[in-house]
Amino acid sequence: MESSVIQRQYDEVIAPHYDQDPQSVIGNSLEVALAQLRNCRLLAAGAKPINALDIGMGTGRFLEMLIGQADRPVRAFGLDLSEKMIEVARERLPDLVAEVDDAANLDACFETQSFDLISTHFVTGFVPISLLAPKIRNKLAPGGYWSFVGGTKAGFAELRRRAAAKKLSWLIRDRHLDLDRYITNPADRADVVFAMESSGLVIRECETFKPQLRFANFDEFLEFAYYGGWLTPIVEALKLHKARPVMRLLLNALVFPVNDHHSIEIVLAQNPEAPAPLIQQSGGNSDADRHYRRSLPAQD
Image (cartoon, rainbow, N blue to C red; front, top):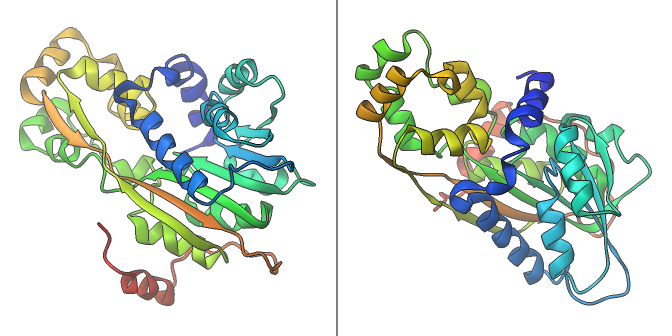
């Protein structure tokens, strides 16, 4: 998707609703990520501040949580495509140093700064992890950490199944719920691990989080998927956000209620202490790459 479209969706649709966090998926995911950081002792008491960069920072929620739980000072940096999101984050974090830009342009941002912690939380739905990983490695200080939280293609399996049902084909006509066309999530944990290790990082912790989701009706689905930001591009492509009353009645009759789950990988990786040459970007699509992915152990 074009970054201008994503920017508009976050500025106009998602920003005013983001912190409502319907069904608490974001908040619960971030708590797991913070627990991983505590386990590695990054948040333990010390005089040296943590230089922390949150890519796709949103409204600054994670940085605020990080500062609240760290027993040492934190210097907060943020990058986001949405100026509206950054405005909210600056109200939360008066000392925030932030830039408005696409995460894909990370190497052109904060050019003289290295970081003890870089977080990317639900960013790889729009910027492929294969593109981000080498850029993040190059921004990490020796010994620095990458906190990754991101959905995978295993998420929303029941919604996919119902959207593909024949009884809906006449209702949405030639429009299809093709998540892969709009969202660039990694397939699974193996994809995440492969991108990180290919960029010279060491995996410290991995956890698969599968939060349960329930949508009693179309309005609850829209609150989560459209205004909550999870499936905003899909909803707009299907024009569901403009559904008229008759369409809503039909969707409630044919689709809802829905019990589903997301599939989220929460991974902590570390830059080795010894400096290494800068990593060049790799798409991870060679035969050797694919063989490596298949050779990784099966995930939960």
